[in-house]
Image 1: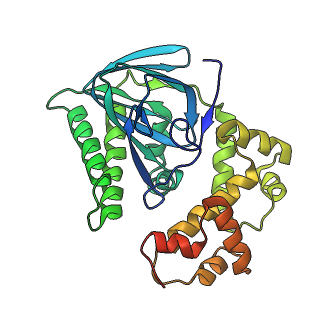
Image 2: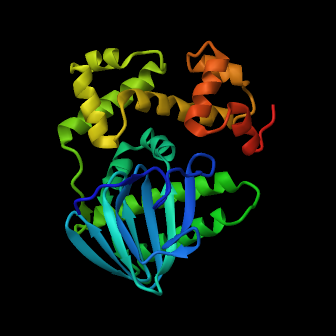
Length: 294
């Protein structure tokens, strides 16, 4: 698969609206209600879980092809190039998880998130863990497609359980497909970079300063982040704090100015411009969209 196309949203889409900044569900294999038989090679900057309820699909990855027949589920890690060829009766769902959601889990158990660097392909086996995961994924889809009180909380809890369940299956399954990701040295530097961003907790610190703390050049850090995420160190720093701002904006006990100050930004107007540039919404509009008025 020579062609590498990256989408910031679902297939052929360049944006995605995560529920509460955490999760999004879409019908598979459709784009704007149009059936797509051939999904050309591409990748996303977020994790995807597929439920195959009917038909078959051929998953292409790293010059390999896996034939998957319903009922089944499979997962695609972030930034992994893949293509799909779907039967005419292929039907299912895609559960997309944001980096913010995985970061929240990472703080509790890093090993669980690291397991998501593997492709899971599981056919349903009655009475086994695979059946439980399949039914759990369907429950997530049903919850997402309804508009019930406490929807965001319920989705977060269900997906937490899903991630742990996938982790447990992976520990039992020696046949899991480990995809080729960037080399371990780059990953180590990248994780240290992310940890530094969290510990410093300010977007005022320069990329040069972070590189110096890591003991590498600014150019080297730039190559590492582009290799792993296709983004610059500056974008990663800003994205982290925008995600932190989104979390804080969903609370009722802080003003926008207080949240900006907490993120070491003394200029509320500048904070609002940055937030709008990254999300398409001002902090106030973001809060209104999520039903929060202060």
